[in-house]
Image (cartoon, rainbow, N blue to C red; front, side):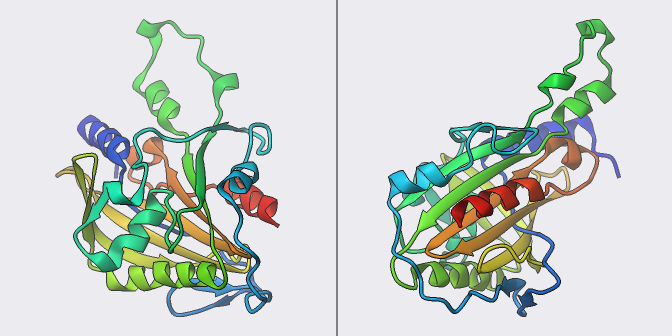
Length: 262
């Protein structure tokens, strides 16, 4: 079902504030999926590596030119700068909300983040303003921006961070609300989904967001552990939402980022 122009504007405002939602992916045939939508690779029992520094994480973030058809930016100014800037009505939902915000879902302050966006500049329209149709405008919004967050942990901290997120999804299945920069967002439902099987552990979830009276929207997020590092991916696609679809995490982005962590 198509969304109205008002719904599109509402979706835009919600994303600017922080949007709301979480995780989904496709798992490899060989991964083992547990009851909470998480999967573990064969190396999940290996000893955790030593935590990386923030500077090392910055170097591990995807850089411009490393994912064909995408451009990389330093980050999103609309996102909260730290965990203290985010207020959640249920403490059990905090790890989930941090993952959405590209903040560390576990007990660490060592992190880095950026945004990776589909690049359609080569297809830019040469039409004059008066000839631009609604279809042209919708296509311009049909790009996915992925918020990518990396965080690193000592000992088994990364494993604990993964468990914190999956436990949070279960505890918050009925929804929650969060406030950041005086903007409040509500989720009406959280469900686990099939994980991608990337890294040593991966988990996938979907959060259904309340779009301020204009219906709901599904956003997807994936969380992946590679050694002592946890990567979070949160996809935003206004064009998909305007047409009643889901906002998904591009496999090209998550695969390239996790490959760089090895």
